[in-house]
Image 1 (cartoon, helix red, strand yellow):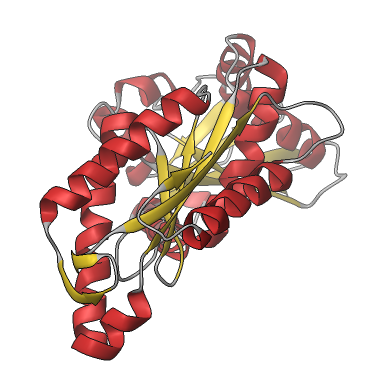
Image 2 (cartoon, one colour):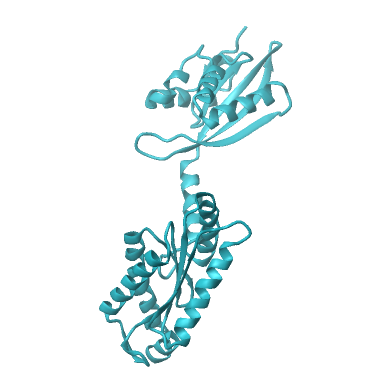
Length: 303
């Protein structure tokens, strides 16, 4: 005798978690109201919304089409069915046509009248997942400028190095330092210094979008740029364009030895990644060129 509504606690029909019960072959023998409602509202899940649909077969079809979750779900089902695991749990994306969504799947088993059954409980965790993604994103952002921070810059440079090592394409790094920023802070106050950094950061955001570069506030008044598939000529032309934009912005810095407006020094390095070398060496070369630019009087670019 298959278990029916009377076998289950009536509370299952009022909970928000989508719940279905299958027999040992995967045939759905029970669904709660939340499961039925989700099936009606989502065309992709409608085939699972009916009693006597085979849950395992739907997962097999998904796995055969290349859906990683379908394969993951089948493996979890097998472990619980064979009693290797008492419970299986996973998180998976399930986007609708209009929004990104994430769900959990919790699989448990029980016995009734000598038969084995599985409980498939799907729960929407989109709000939690979006909050997690936002928290991670914020951890990679500089709060003053809104640019990426040093941590993200370093990680992304390592990733791009590996990508360019495989493709054989050049990778360029530029480091820009605002000239005599300490004098600006001492003369105008730290509040004005922060305003200046925020203003430059806003310019860098627009610049990075225009050139497809990754830009970050690397620390203090120093900013870093990564140009994918770019040699020295490409990176140099881009950074000279930014220097021109900075000059046109005419940000006041009357105590600068270079004039009455804000200027910056830049160091650039580019190479085709090779085995045995590292992204760190590319960064060090750009930093060395920045040091040269500052030593030669600032307000210039060295490559």
